[in-house]
Length: 515
Image 1 (cartoon, rainbow, N blue to C red):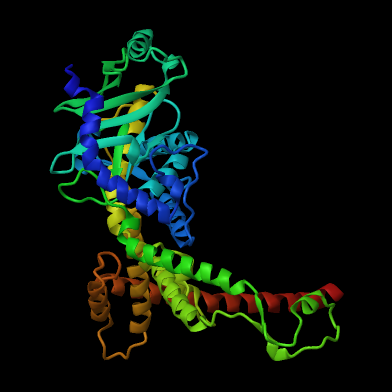
Image 2 (cartoon, rainbow, N blue to C red):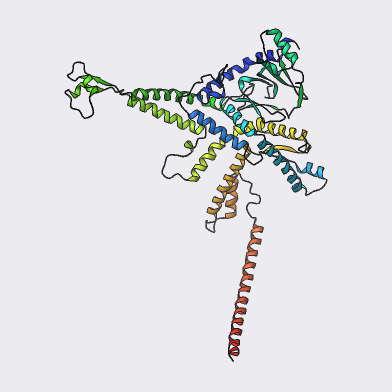
């Protein structure tokens, strides 16, 4: 391979396209959680900037936690297998087998969910979601064994085609020279005579796509590392680059924090001014008139309750006289905090100020805010959840822990995230319809109640099939109720008559027993 086409040279070449996104990501990180994307050269002893406000960090952690629980719910599969009726009949050669087939597929779904829980993927997923919220890009790697790795934006470059499909991925890492093969160590020591086993060396991993599969290899000092070449199926790669938002024509995504960067900057500046002003206002200084009769030293050394000669007007307290200015700043801070709380789905934004706030009102507002993330869930379901579950299934199939299913007939489908929001909206509509049905039941007889229910359901966009009884079904139900009432009325007199006969017989037998 020519030197100009090495992974290191390609990484340096494609960095120029990544650097603007990296710069914006660091800016967003400094206003929220500085450790998510620190500046170049960061190590454990580096002093990171501390924001003057905490609303950014609270918002990022809260939003990432909500997304984690929605995308990867606890003890519930976030996907399911689907199979259409034609494929099912073709595979089973008989009808009525859907129940048994779906029961078997459900066992596989639970096995995959147990793998997710056992490998602690959720821990790395939470870190990845925070990176997406703040930086907008993250790279995930699922090794054959042992959890999931998270690469920050400053550790990888990616190249996509105009449709957004990934073409190349290159990661940059530092490893100790002693961990590399001897041939690589000799090549590095030729360039660096003083290199020892602990010397850090940059290693590049290049993943490239062709028409049939993914190719991968690792490179150090311009040379491929032996034994690192490999290939993966197109839809089952362990390297998963994820974007928070998709922008046509761009290789990288934009972050959620970037959309509210103006409010965060304004809040940061105002909070700094208020905190520094409050510190200045809290400082107590006494001023003494130099031409007065009061002795400053005698006054400072006097005990509590002492009598001293002097004039009260000779002593005063220094004040800022900036109350009205601070009040304007505080009102601006309150407005910005409220706007950011809504953006990051904080509970303080959901619950309004009032003495009587109902639980239903809080639930309704929370659902409205969650529904606003529908676009975010859409891209994450396609670029995060689906590739992740396909890779886990592929690894378990290769380890003989799952049966290999026909890929054209049985496909995994994501059922959390945007799908969960859809089911939540369906429940909301059904609840509204049932409340409307209760109002219709109280209408006068002149109103056609069946037609009113149909119109109400249609206005809500609901599927009315099977929800409202037809006229024939309603008449049959009424007839059954009438017959049941008649039967009940026929049984009750018989029971009463039998009871009276038994009572009369007991009374007749009583005198005979006495004789």
